[in-house]
Length: 133
Image 1 (cartoon, rainbow, N blue to C red):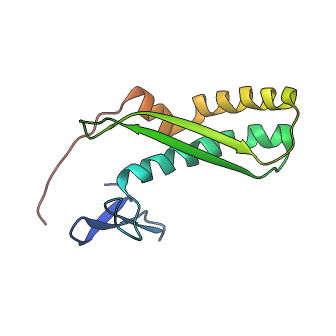
Image 2 (cartoon, rainbow, N blue to C red; image 1 turned 135 degrees about the horizontal axis):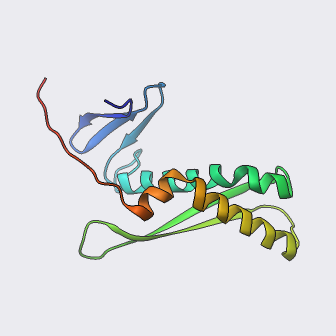
């Protein structure tokens, strides 16, 4: 199967790995030292938006520092998110005209090149299999 795996460490705590030796601890959001699955989804969305827009932004304003934030709205009674809002902050003094040009190309790059965002927006079926071995 895939090279993405999680292995149980203790009750509701898992160690995720990617086959290239990178690991992340996963667990409930009230547990110290772990990311919750929802936080990982938001990180994936933020990272994907940043990576997808990186070249478009750099071509217009250069190597300016930037951050990507994602805010998720959680449904009150169902265990799911209902929406995500991304914000890319360019840490540079940029005039309004340049910022608007950057905004347009960055959003277009994200909307066409961010696998995570496209998957969330279009929904992907998830199958489940449980085996012994």
